[in-house]
Length: 378
Ligand SMILES: *Cc1c(COP(=O)(O)O)cnc(C)c1O
Ligand code: SF4
Image (cartoon, rainbow, N blue to C red):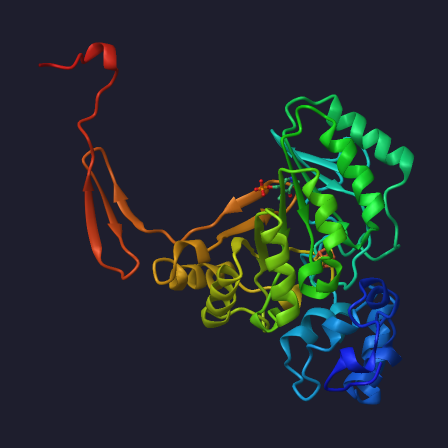
């Protein structure tokens, strides 16, 4: 692919998502030519590709500024030699998803909901992916026998009322295959909501077609969670994709990974979250970066995340502030991490700090051991 100003005019099928997937940039030569890399940079990419694959949709690549070596989108999708450096805490399965998996493709960790990984394929691979050991290793979607087993598991566990379909990226599948899975899930009476986790609105917005939305609408209630990492990803095309999803009556949330050198400043995340709320996308989670292999250079300290949350909370609309969580290594699940606003707390009062750092006191009600022992006195 050649760089140009108006891609849609030069590439007649630019807005066809299948063309975008078929024409992904997957080789060191491909990305080096597109970004004008030096031979040394190209060799570095080649070396990374022997460990973790690369794929970038032409649309997403077109958002990179080739003259900026620190371009955030470039860092998200183009391999850097740092991925090949071993880091002491790296884990192949940082979230313990293998041990919480009762049958292939299902992760059952929380009481009322499961994660259902229906594909290993994405249109664009994020360098910091938490499932990078499996995602992108092979371009595989769930087979029919595996699907039968996973559905059997969900059917035989009536406590499951929320199924979170993820991967990989479920919206890179054909509409027919996805509909097959959704219709099977919808036929299970105790499945209340179905959620889809997808990065398609960001990296392949042309996939959000009328045909796809008409299909999804048949299986409501559906919620979609997408994955914007930086304000530069918000474009007219991604904005249209988000608007189309919300206009179809599907609530849209967003999760963002906190990434060193990409979005680790309060100003950047504030701009991102406010723009998302403008698009009617609710920031849901901000994740501390996981311990997947070869992504140590993306990790910030936890304190940096807490400081960013502190800078945002109270200063911008509550709707624009996500929950900051660490997905506990080893399979502990998501743990909310907060700035500590409570300075002291006893039976008499709670002393707390507000968003400006001013001190306030909340008097506790008189303590009663037991209501029966303390009947209300008139
Ligand atoms: C994140 C996650 C969920 C969904 O959690 P919510 O907090 O409800 O969004 C479910 N199962 C697994 C294994 C997860 O990692
Ligand atoms: S879209 Fe999600 S699953 Fe796919 S590479 Fe990015 S983080 Fe991983």
